[in-house]
Length: 383
Length: 146
Image 1 (spheres, rainbow over the protein chains, first blue to last red):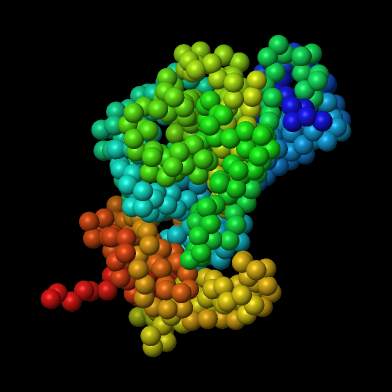
Image 2: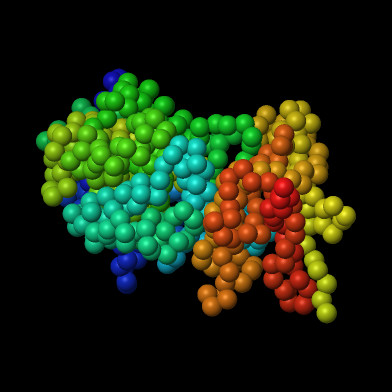
């Protein structure tokens, strides 16, 4: 077996945003039908499915709408890595030789405002949330505040990331926030969790994505442009890392699950950071994109300040990051978010990204998700 | 008049004299954790003992909670008209750990990484029995002016 033995042969998406009267599951169904059409296959051809949703119902019940074909359908719920975990599972189901054609599905629909955290479901007692902690937004504010102190990142860089996200989102018909904002607008918006303002945070949202995977040696039956999945990795936190929802952190330092997942994915793909042409990195808030550039190995800590100022991560830059507007412009339906990144990379590698197509003729593309309670998922694609 | 009660049992020793936070120390590898837990997150050992944590340390990082948290889980004031932003940070207790905590200050101009902090206790809300519920926080140690 080679590492080229899994290909993405069909992609589908329901627009992200707010959709009154449309259930999360219906968005998932729309994404599935669109992926089937893209691959030129019927639902009855699909041998297995992994479906992920955190807040919008059990994915396996969607077979009553798609057709009762008897396929193996497994639900995945893994916090912010739900979509990535569905894809990881689908990847391994084909790699194992057990199946030829399957689908990874993610959808979600969250209530408005910041995520409501269940301290009990997170293994924590109620005093933690009752006392005014247990907010994911606080973690992001505290992590970037420390990072800015250690590595000389300024508020201007935070605003530049958001400005880029909304500009890229304005060229994406699937995105939620499609109005460009100025650096001044972003810095002047409400301070939610110092140093992060309203327009530096993404919002929980709605949407669905589906990806059809096939054995690489059969991929050309379905598409002229198969995109190969070179690596799919999920990692949880190790002792000493600084994570969301942590009543304490150890004095001992560990670089965290993103660095671990990234290193494992590069090893699996037989590539390094310098081999990647574009990346979609978790940008729950603008500071996260900055820190994740370094944690994934794409620059040194602190180097982001001049990379952003020089426009290196813009669509026309040396290394485009979050070309579809990221979580900032798309919002975060948790079950679908990691699959959205892969969807965007497939479009970019096919050359089908329209107004936001990167001009550097990309051959390789990287995705990274991060979330509670300290979990990261990475994929590497190549054509 | 109601009395004052702790937000939870077993988290701190208040209302003792010189109250402290309660953590766990692993009897195998000496790793210190907060709040208490019966097994070790570092060495997977299954034997820990309750430890009273230090009362002072340096502010390692911080933010300000600028909007009312969702309730539940939050038990304090969430009325947008009266909500007061509050500081949250991690305070590094030397040789032990960094503890996540409310701060008694909320003005970014006053908050500096590295500033000396000490444990205190603050009212959170009044419960249905009319008792004032108290949780822990860290406050800046007043520096003597030369």
